[in-house]
Amino acid sequence: MDNTLRAIILGVIEGLTEFLPVSSTGHMILAMPWLGIDPIDPEPFWKAFLYFVQIGAILSVVIYFFRPLLRQIFAKPTRGWANHVAVKVFVGMIPGGVAGVLLNDVMDKYLEWEVPVALALIVGGGAMWWIERKFRPETGPDVETMTLRQALIVGLCQCFAIIPGTSRSMATIMGGLIVGLPAATAAQFSFYLAIPTLLGAGVLRVVKHPEALDGEHLGVMLIGFAVSFVVAWMAVAGFMRYVQSKSLVPFAVYRILLGAAVLGIWYLGK
Image (cartoon, rainbow, N blue to C red; front, side):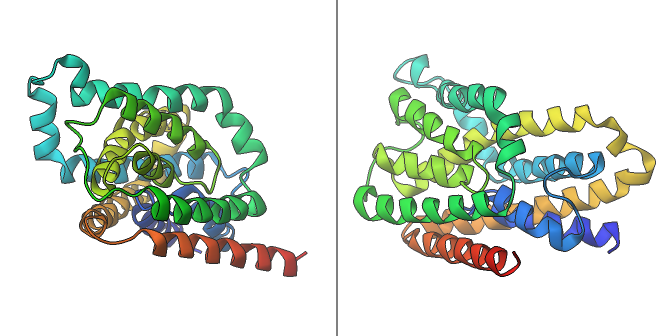
């Protein structure tokens, strides 16, 4: 298969799944073998590519939330600097950053294959279903009035996302519901947390593989980046409208069905 076509397909998958609670990493791991790419030990170019297109998806969040984010960052908080949005994001990203540094290589080595991903999809889907039914509040604070404690707990939930197939968005949005955030607020704060968390990881991985940015590969990287950006922007816009009033249970059902299908395919192929 031509690398340009691979880049387009992977860009679409990344853009669609990065911010929906369905696990972009899980979908990438499941799709890569069908595209002729080893998901366990891909070539350095594809390792860098996956993180480069992730930066494209992150950029879409920055653009989508640009006006409220700019206002919130530069506004002086009325209840003290401890309640500033930037402080909440910083506090929320600390647990995931520590977990990523300590455990990321272990997770990459032992869990990035079909069965653990499928199990994470199923377990995460069941957790989503239960949390949505039991904890989802109808009203609550917005990002500017949520507390540091809520931000920290959401950040702790983000640590679960280091397990491939879990979904960073799922973990943080469900954490937000548990601590009393409305779904729209939980989603918005989840996306804010994604900006420094995923941007840092993406830049670091690309820097570690500078050969992926040479003339031979740069065009493919840019195509994947552009596709990921456009698709992610549409996905974020659609999801933010969706969570205002609709249940997240359909995403839970999708995860469970996908995980079950992956386990079935794996079992039949043994």
